[in-house]
Length: 265
Image (cartoon, rainbow, N blue to C red; front, side):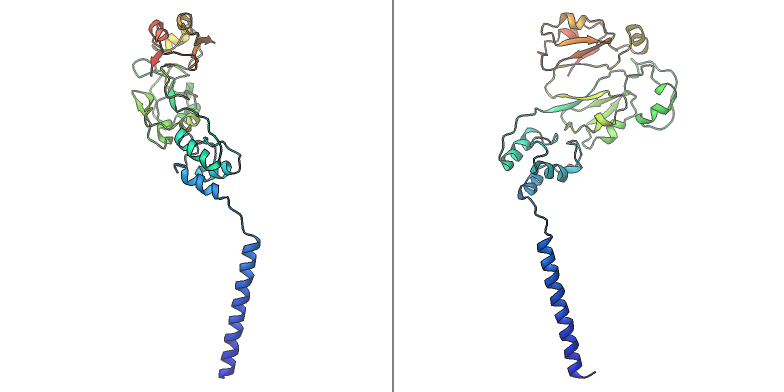
């Protein structure tokens, strides 16, 4: 090949490269996705656990929603009020205090207190109990199954199973709600971190049925409600409920409960 041919080939290749580069540059400018600087700032302020407790697919999803005004600035349960205030400053708005919360397991049906109908050997997954005769071996069909599904889904190691019942470490809990979603018997709820008393039972069975199944179950006798000076306790369908906003933590309900189904937190 002659020198002229080589030079011509190089020129053609160079010109083609320049054309492609200019074309791609123009296309990049035309189709450039505009990013909100606040979104990146919000993402950096979030804890980065990607637990999904906010209802979005990880922290990046929440950051995008906050930047668009589709989610409140204090939507991150893990970050709490501290992160909420920081994000509020980024977004130029005010953030109301959501108050710290913690998961609570409404059951104290331990191996000694809860009766059993048979001995179970099989998959260690509470969600599988719907396929097992009677919904599981425990006589109480509303109590904790104790197989640890909630503990395994907790990204913070805040739940453990002790003596057949799930227990929450309120200091480690970030109230992400993973355990609430995983519990097939809906025994776990998010309550105020500063709550003083709670009903440690989720049974709605009549008194005689509950008494036969568990030594610590609520029988709906109403003694707690009648003795509460703040009228924070109500009984519906044989089940006591404490209104945490009204509760003063005096402890009379727990003291008077004949089944000791109300516990101090």
